[in-house]
Image (tube, rainbow, N blue to C red; front, side, top):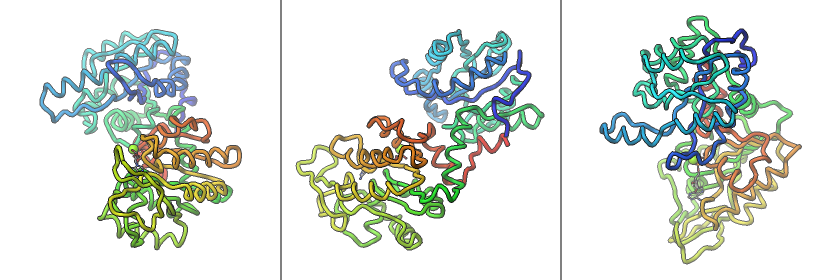
Length: 405
Ligand code: ADP
Ligand code: MG
């Protein structure tokens, strides 16, 4: 697979670049420009080589099945124009913006580019065919470019026109397609958690968060690869039920109790579950919050974080790891009362700094690491929530990356 630094003779050539500029916006203002910052190395490399850089990204959701006025409203809300301005500030040079997402308007904008200039195209999801990988749309876009670079790791698990259709066509025409620096870094780091080398053992996965149902494939995959799996979060409740423990009012996915039981059997003691929990008599504004054994959650109470004994138990297990993959907060970390479990896990991972390879994957997990100040204590924090998990599930394969190979 080609990497962006290997692309040659780009002077005056049009390079189509898929980036992930899906930034949080509020009233048209960018609240966190991290995704734009992360894309800079690739963009600078291409501009430095004299390319005409045409950037594509989605932003938020545009549901084309809705009524026309709803679609218009969603388009207005998810307008990429402010990102062109911000990117221009970060690059120290003007970035052009094309309101047209295809056709003559877009062609004219691309034609107006000079070597070493960048153009950002309006939200790819303004186009109905983007998410369906519509062949005509992909052909229109591909016709604009001499080369393609994929640097949107957070979108690499989607086979859309901008992530799959364009590179598939260009590759077929013998034009160069490559991965950008951000994708390269993500792939290298996540692949280490997928193709495990003996020197990275013991390899411990920490899985928590909301649901077993959305993470079955992750659990299955990690059960095969890891030496130990620590389970926390709401997900653990389904495992308690499989063990026959009363779960009170905790969130349990009844349809997955059987699956959880099978995992426990298959794991042969490699799954480590919480022994105590912080339980409350309501999700919001409870009148009673206390610690109880996970073997018996009383009726009227629900588990909302791991308890103090478990924090010690998990920290001790983590301290023995050579490699850690962490996905999923231990509790309802959005509320102050249930943050301690997630913080304790982050602290234990921090303790491995310089001694082990540690990765955080998952949207909420990365947000928690950032919120609690542990972002820089991981060897790698993935920029792609869903994409990082799919990479683990599919043994290192993602459509938007495989298509380049
Ligand atoms: P990620 O995005 O990192 O993959 P998830 O989306 O699976 O993580 O899980 C995050 C959510 O899980 C958070 O909103 C958190 O409040 C919730 N959560 C964690 N533990 C519990 C619990 N015991 N009860 C209810 N919700 C929980
Ligand atoms: Mg999430």
